[in-house]
Image (cartoon, rainbow, N blue to C red; front, side, top):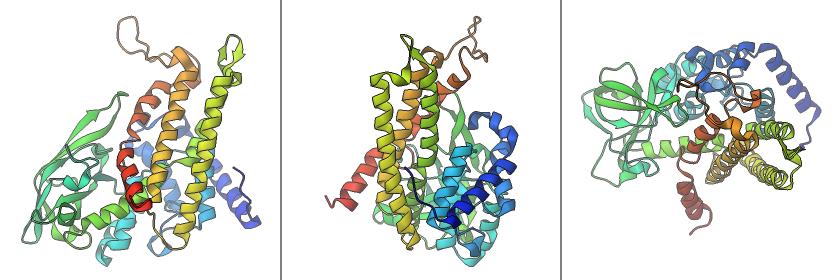
Length: 395
């Protein structure tokens, strides 16, 4: 989709493009996925952007953000996708940071926001529990007041990159006598606190990205609670709106389709490039049509945000369609590379590091397996359809 830019917008785009070209750490281009990256690797681009003052495009200037307008944020996303930069971690910048500067007190803002911007504090998300994923309001992790502290007991699961985290923003139950949503609070937990155990979950693609977190008599200062006790559901919904909007990933999906077209141009079927076959050509066209529609929806959402309105139920539409498109791209990539996507084994039965086919086949199967999660996290797509039915269609 072509968008008309003003001369000022074009100048901004050129500035962004040049900055990325000159400052993106070159060694990161060799890292094919987050599984190949250390904690320092993941934070490298974050720290470059913090030094420039560009690490938080959607934050108010008073808290250290750029406060860019909708067009600038669109350009920023497009240029990062174009350059295939490593995505910044969303947990501090896009999730808990906005909660803190919207609902936290002045002491909390002063304590946490600068360290989120600098990357000094790595955050993880303590929402889902065994048995409380999409039905998040049924969570059972308890926080009981004890003087100036809360004592927290329970467990969280699917906690992304908790093995590196310094802090967790956590939903806890502080009242069991009221409606489920009305007895939840939002609290910040130092991951170095005694009583916290992090156990890895190895996913289907063989990676260690998610974890179980167990909390046993974890003492958390009451001053770490955001907003009011038992009002955490309000803050949780605000955070999820931001998370779901960000999951759409339109710009990076556009880049992924470009890469898919390149692969389909190189692979052949009966001597003809795959991309010229009617069936595959139709699949790519369907993808591009859906992605263009999603991009228009995302731009409308950004326009509403520019008027001071936070993400509403339409963020569920972005989440559903965005994740479905991401999954379809990885499915078509596996289809395009064919047998090269198969996880080959060495003669001794152990995994081989040798690439059996062309470079573009590297990571195709891992990407496919990893993307199975996208329609589940951030609230499963089935739950998002319920939200749309109730909040948009009034059913």
